[in-house]
Image (cartoon, rainbow, N blue to C red; front, side):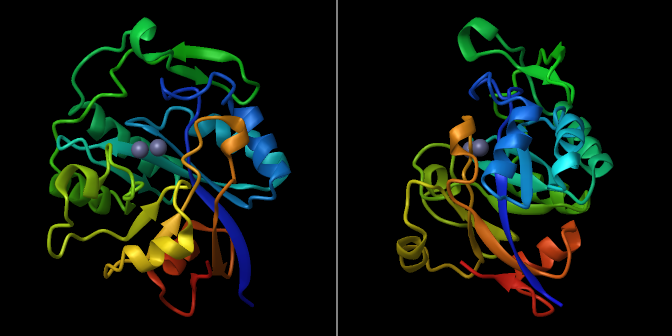
Amino acid sequence: MLKVVRADLHIHTCLSPCADLSMSPRRIAAQAKEKSIEIIGISDHNSAENVPALIEAARPYSIKVIPGIEVTTKEEVHLLALFANLELAINFQEEIYTHLPGENDPNLFGWQIVANEKDEVLDFNPRLLLGATTLSLEETIDLIHAGGGLVIASHIDREGFSLLGQLGFIPFGLPLDALEISPRLNFEEAKKRFNYDYPLVTFSDAHKLEEIGTVTTSLLVKDLVFEEIALAIKGQAGRRILN
Ligand SMILES: [Zn+2]
Ligand SMILES: [Zn+2]
């Protein structure tokens, strides 16, 4: 039996220097519950260090957490990388860290808080998470796929840090799994305007609590597992996007 689930797969936590400090694991999980979101993707800039806490914080609500990272390529294009489990995401994070130069200046960019599921501060990430990696668009996509992940081009309708904003076009045959439309654009309008040969999804890209679940993508799946979500996004085996 297939069922419809609501997914918001692009949510930042207090680890992202640009996110609100209130974006703590417990509060994010509670807000997702409040908004009846069944699947959340945690996708901080160039890091997955708050994913373990989110998995624990979401457990009492039976909310499925998809481990993710929003990678910045050297072209300053944001790509959403989503993984089947924490281990794959952390493996990918370690690879990203070797290609991420610079140190964070909290006074300039903001704090990068690593928290636990009780919202206690464990650490401050010292890396320049807001910076670009030295990896090209193609290299990043290949690395995500090699690591078992899904690649979604972030907020393509935005001018800054998006594939279309930075390059002006989508390179022919680029092996993306989907394109994301930001909440700024009506999804119906976006479908007419971005008539590419890729599935379209829309997520909140929440940096504040109240933004979580403001836009979601409904998926027709069998279970709340990554493999089903991947099938639905790709439109395979009868699974599909319903928006
Ligand atoms: Zn982004
Ligand atoms: Zn984002």
